[in-house]
Image (cartoon, rainbow, N blue to C red; front, side):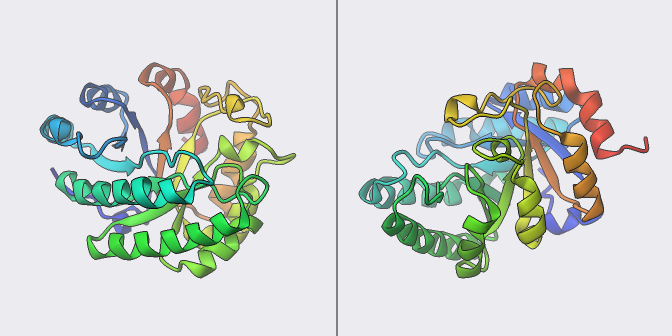
Length: 260
């Protein structure tokens, strides 16, 4: 499998998709995508799939990014420390086996829902994790959930090597305006990856519908105008099933390359 360094993406945008199984890697390849983002929920059991994923990469030439497991109760410091952190360390051990160099993780930091003492703990959590990740050449990206840019700028200042996966779907929730504009204005230098999916807005996790791009209310034309204006070049994952990706692929390609 040929490794693709993040620095190699400086002149282009690579489109990829979520792969929930090795067979879905083939589906993403047939759709013309460049990479697959694989969620590792149980790293202790992932070894059973490594050879299959390695074979699919060899067959297709697709490279892999990683999405980590969910954190569980966002205010339970004991569980975060004794279960979630060790699990992420296991993920860091697994990723090099498939030449994965970027890890996206959920770690809710919205002060409207997460206790102040827990946020302080999580900043330390991220410091420790990014230090361990740097030792094996992995970039750690925090994914925005309901947070806005103002709520995360202090976190990025405290953890210099932490980066951002900008989720355009999450940015539509719990906000009058899609918060991606704030992140592009205040955290541009931290954005290393983007997640694409659509929804109808809303105020709860149930509203995170993961609709095909263009089937919800998100103003992707306006967002991509901003992305082009700031010369974003990097990776974008369509967080959808392969059949959903197929249904919106033409529209997404136009957003990425409007002149083609």
